[in-house]
Image (cartoon, rainbow, N blue to C red; front, side, top):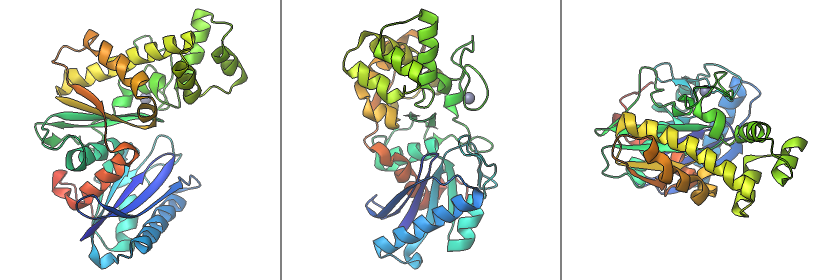
Length: 321
Ligand SMILES: [Zn+2]
């Protein structure tokens, strides 16, 4: 038998047909359509159809569909209301269930990634671990005592919105201030750099110029840091301190023995992101420190989680259709 896995992200939508051992047959990816809820649903269905075609698999051989979606969402209603997509309560579960006549399961993408890590990645056999994505946004999923934490609506691990700055200098995409994501996510790092430059009155640096011309991106900052530019290294170190506070909050609350890290920002800048966290997390954590390492599943971690969800829905007991 096979499963369909869907990674519904703010940037891309991906669909895959997989065997139970995580062997992907047909796999497709497109930029997320943001024209309206139905356009996004139609896009997702179209990707599934084409992935089935590529894998030469029929629906009769498919056990179910798992979705890892950008949040927030409502697991009971089967709807998603992503912060970075301008529509609320998109009925993704019912739509796919009606169209494909299969059980459909929905999880927040960070939680799905944790499930993927448990079944296909580095957390096999771990009872207490966390997954953290450092990407366009910041999110995660946590296993405590062998159970994936869900919460009343399925949003138990919105860690990107942990408050890490009591002075609330920067505004988050959710509209609140002082959240982790407002400082350290890919989309908000330029805001942090702008704040730093004004605060410290920095001058005479390509980063200052990029900031003034509006061309600064997080990739540019990390590329300059890789070239050992002093200002870039200072800013990356301070971002690392904020990340260390976020990681320490997770350690203090969930007491994991392992934290795996994914997301483009971390995957593309392993040393610059992880080294400051490992070096500084002890300044803020009271519990014993876990191993902190990159996910071996790379960009596919949410897809693996969606596949695991379709094959093992008993892990979350949330059949919605
Ligand atoms: Zn927020």
